[in-house]
Image (cartoon, rainbow, N blue to C red; front, side):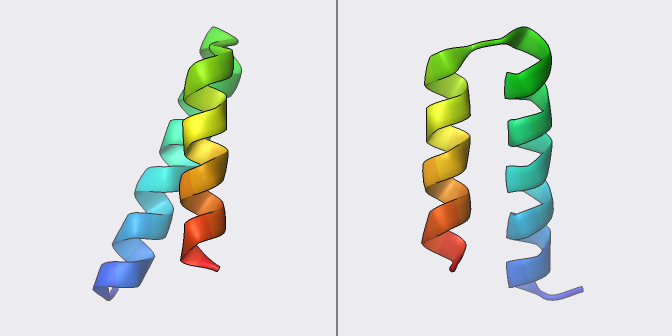
Length: 38
């Protein structure tokens, strides 16, 4: 797995954590990070 794959995996994990915690700020940061990947 390349660097991009690892970053995408971390972002998906961040989204999952945000969904679990219901943290709107964290969800927004995770969504923005995912969009920055393309």
